[in-house]
Image (cartoon, rainbow, N blue to C red; front, top):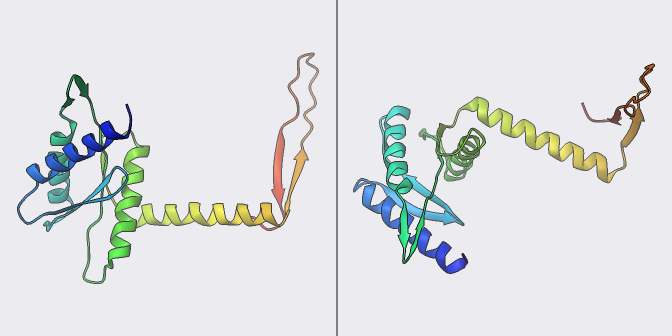
Length: 165
């Protein structure tokens, strides 16, 4: 449908967010198709209610001329502490957002420290694997499987590294 239609959809979503937000909420387009909503809340349940209300407003069909579009959204929530930095809050909300998308879209997920540890562990694994590839530390090993079947599949292939855990 093109960039023009996409831009019009984003403008409409922004309008709906502004319309459904509370006076004290701050809304900003963060980039691409992501928006940030900053709210003063009493806890995760309060934040979840606000997120659900916003999702309900966003999910109504969007009419653009003769086209009717359905839009879905996911929400990642993080709660601040007195020690929270802006970078941490954005990173944690983004981690929760990606979890919401993984779990099926149109979802709301609240960031947990376990979620953060999992994301950090995945990042460490990716970095270690890239380093092993760059330094040619991986080797291919074939593990023979003995079978008396005529249509036996090829043996499984695994990758091994001297450094990766």
